[in-house]
Amino acid sequence: MSRASDAIATLLDAAHDSDLVGPTAVSDALAQLGASEGDAAEIAELVHRSQRELSRLRRREHELSALFSSARELAELRDSDAVLARLVQRAHTMMGVDLAYLSEFDPDTRELRVRETSGSVSASFQTLRVPPGRGLASVVVESRMPQWVSDYSEYAKERHDSGIDDAVSSEGLVSLLGVPMVTSDDVLGVLFVANREARSFSPDQVALLTAVADHASIILQTTQTLRDLQESEDESRTTLASLTAHLVERDRANTVHRELVQAVLAGGGFGPVAETLASALGRAVAIIDAQEQIIAAAGLPLAPSMLTLPEPVREAIAESRRSGYCVAVPEGGVRAVAALSAGSRHFGALLLGDGDFELGAVDLRTIERAAQVGALLELQQEAASGADLRIRSELVADLLDDVPERRTDVERRARRLGVDLQVLDSLILLSVPGDQHTGALRELSRQLDDRSLVGEYRGFVVAAYNAERSAVDVERLRTHVASAIQHPVSVVVPRPASGALPEAFQTAMRTARLITALELTDVTAQVDDFLPYSAILDTDVRALSAFLRDTIGAVRRYDEERGADLLGTLRAFVRNNASPTRTARALNFHTNTILQRLDRLDHVLGASWRDDERMFRIGIAVRLDELRDRLQAR
Image 1 (tube, helix red, strand yellow):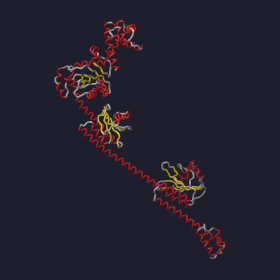
Image 2 (spheres, rainbow, N blue to C red; image 1 turned 90 degrees about the horizontal axis):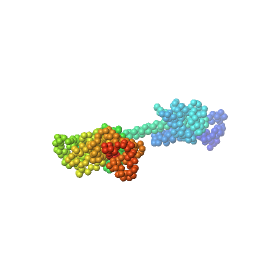
Image 3 (cartoon, rainbow, N blue to C red; image 1 turned 30 degrees about the vertical axis):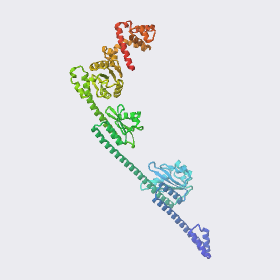
Image 4 (cartoon, helix red, strand yellow; image 1 turned 45 degrees about the vertical axis):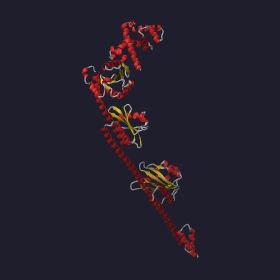
């Protein structure tokens, strides 16, 4: 090949790729072709211009290829975070900068938070937050236009922030270019590129970064849309599940309501109520009375906490009584309770155990409805029981009254109740407050069999029964009645009175009144113990108190003031027929000691206290006072 051909080939290679042929080779080739100095300079400029254009076109081809790749990734979007990271990396590479990063805009706080970076070396920069109105980023957000600065240190002072300055300084950044990521209505963030030296940015670079920012905007918008769709789907799923559960609860409630109505109409008592709830709610159910005794149960076995109530369950029942609602119990074998109440009256409670599902709001209302049904059943039974108690009380009154005309029809009425009056040989009398008579009558009826008679007569609760057929533990019976009515109860027991029940009642009534006058409560007393006193003493509490105070009150005061037991000596003296010797023997003292104490009694009671009349009165007072102390101690 000739030298001219080589020169032409060199020029063509130079136009195709500046890396293959440098400027000196172009000048040499033109000289070989014999070009003048002016023509050579003009042709060299044309070659360099072709090189620059070709370089620009190749760079543009590379940028478009990167943008097309981003578009494909958008179309195949699966992981938005990964795609955003890739876009920031591409911006870093395509722009030929030291650092690229994306800041996401928070419309609530109006802060910009760095989300993705490429080329960053500072941890503080990767978590940078830009406050509203600060930094170059805020200007981009406010103007919605690209913004750049060749030297950030010389940027407007009012836009500087110490946190931003520290982060920029830690990265060594000097020049920055930021373009907005926008939708039709909102700013989503800012895409930045930066260099660690002063540098200007060309319109082509701004346009290229804007195109990448548009892709990032699509990703953020798509991410938000997908997030909203996911939240909407989750909310719809939750709503559907809640609606389905509500419908299931409502169906259970309708079933329970229908079966409860049938149970009430059939008169089956509390058993069907427990069975219905246990079957519908899939758990053990127990119904207890006011004394915490189980009266019906279903869904066995029962948890131990249903048999013996722990304190949290008692507190929940008390809360249910106050509020009228079913109350959940946080732990233990009992999960929910509902009190059986009517106004201020309390009949017991419904107890529900563990089940396969949590009790919902409709289930709790269903339990409350069942508790109301239970209260109605109790009132229904009370009404029937009350009518029977009234009949029996009338029969008791006619049996114990000493007017013959009232007793003419007693035998026939007693036979209708299944009671044989001829075998009733024992009587007990209970002293309770007037407003508690009904409760005491009901509990007393539960404790005795149907062949006994229980009723109200002259302000007392009375029971007539056959002692041989019904062995009655009077003290246990008194405790049960007192627990049922939540009030102290005194019981008087006369001696067996076959055929003489009216007389037995009279002696028991006098004894009961004497006990009341002595201000004794919650005791069991035998008529025989009080017989001499009830026959002769006034049963008015003030009169009896005055009698005891006037006779032996001075001795009690003496003992209280000095810590002595002069009253004990007086009691022993009375019991031993006023004999000092026998008194000393009974108390294990020397006779002289007893004589000294009797002298002290002369000083306290007066010298005439041993006279017959005064000694009689003192003896009664001492014995009655001692009997009262003994009953109180018992």
